[in-house]
Length: 124
Image (spheres, rainbow, N blue to C red):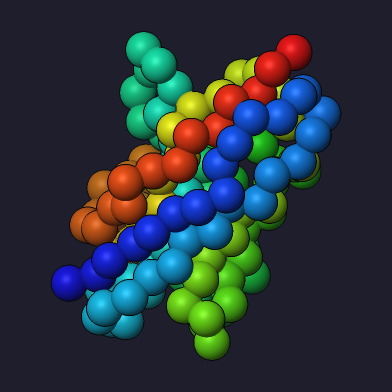
């Protein structure tokens, strides 16, 4: 089993920044892939950024490229999502997720473990 606890959400104005954190515990083999996903009201859940441990080429959804950065501190079992130049359309519940394998195509298939989420609200 894997447990994930997110933090760092909040309300900021457009153009601002937030850093989300996800502390993981439990089986390391079941969290080779870790990432961030979001779901806005009335919309489907979408992948924001994810990657394998040590990967230099994480996946980013086009809408956040150049603004968001995913990173991880293995010593702290923590994955971060640095979010800059935030836009109102980034408003969503953000979830940390983990799985043995990353999705083979953009999505969240195979991400077996999920945190409870942290809310990000961006005002214009």
